[in-house]
Length: 288
Image (tube, rainbow, N blue to C red; front, side):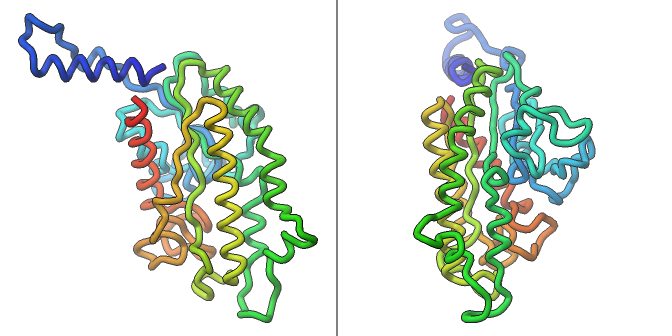
């Protein structure tokens, strides 16, 4: 795995700096090839509308300032970013758009590092959030939390649980295609604080809490599945504390239903992508 080889190289360089030239062979920069990094996933990874735009595939609405690009720069890695807005796990093995290769095609035995964020579209969380919009205060309108938990069954959580085996199979396939890579699963973040912030975000308090709890359940599912399949989970929730869609516009990492920065609604903006990319780079460094 790349982490072990990089750790050995780091140790050699550190010792070389302290020892005489005759005592320890000198490691040069040429000995350290850049990590071959493949970034996969959906719009949470791709950061749609954040400038500058990746013009190599306009259908994917991918940014050159998304978290994979931030992490790659920090790591000095060679990046192949195949994240694509709207992607589901199915698009890892099948084309999402004409001329867009399946994301799995980017993986091979030379891949050192893989990051991926997936599941939000598979489990319909974005559509569910839109159903929670209420422009009028209670009691006008209706609660999406009540609708999704009618009869004592939480249908959104049930959908996440039903999808988990597909995600497990996805990670197994990543390991097969990139057997020498370290795999990092990047979780979805802190979209809205408990109780929400109506009317700043037009979602009732009970619905805001319910939606974020559902996102957290998806995160817990991603984490457990990642750990069970040899991957490392990067939790982005803590990054969003004080930076969710209820924060002042200047402090937001994740945009609300009406963006206050050049970014897609309910997605990371440039500051959010930068923070997530930094966390990814730190996690990769900590594993080496």
